[in-house]
Length: 387
Image (cartoon, rainbow, N blue to C red; front, side):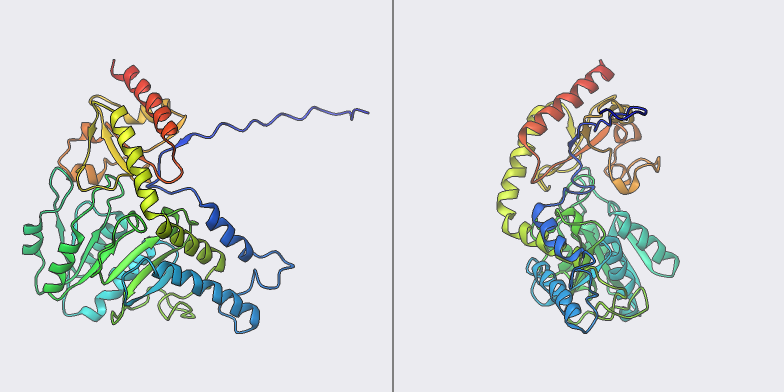
């Protein structure tokens, strides 16, 4: 018998766009989700909701899961260091930059690159207001730092040299091994922002501090880590219970740690396979976007990041017109600021070329068919704009 009353509105789920924004975040790997589920903790679970810092058996089981994850991440790092869990790479980089400086006094200089992520760039600018000398190294039209200029600026007064391994906006890989060697020759420490490169490209083996993030390697959001070489002294940013090796107070999440660890292990196991797949996607995209200009070096670049521009393009309008593809005009962290990309500006591009640039990011779960369909949608909309 039909029930009286107003008919329920039918909810329609919009189709999922083709996802090409891997630099902003990556899809959660099924293996990472599976590792997290036991530690999300239903009320009737004896272990899943336990505090990993408690001394009872349930707490010890949770702590053991955290240590398994720590070992899985450390396996992808250079030997001779330890992994400190943080809330993300931004906290990890703040801990590296701000935490290392007190022990390095009277040295008081930071050398970094103009195209760095805000987590390094803005932290360094803030430290400059606190008395640190700051040298922002320029880049050439390919986005690469001038090593001769770097050598001249890294001196016996320099405390830290901080460099991004893979740029988040243009995918350019900096000569981190050379920069680390210069830092050590001058007696400084080398900090590497490896967020976009961890699990994908080789890490600098002589780095002193390496920051990474789980959600850029198909892990969960809300957790990152700082790898610290043995012997490096850091001061904590936050004071409290000192749970994370005395450097990072606060209760760890076994679920987030486990998801991060599983994602790291998977990245290590699949590194060659993922690299080959991403290279095929890049080649397909470059063929489809024939006539578009690539921003940044193609020779020194992570293949899963293409920053492209087309003359006369209004990218804000393009993104509005192409709702079927999730792509970006640059860093997700700076979206909505209204300012042109500081990375593309540092390459020497005028504002009109910066504002006609898009970033396409793809990876493990992207298919060639998705690249082809996305290219068709973007190019068709661009053609309608530019005639």
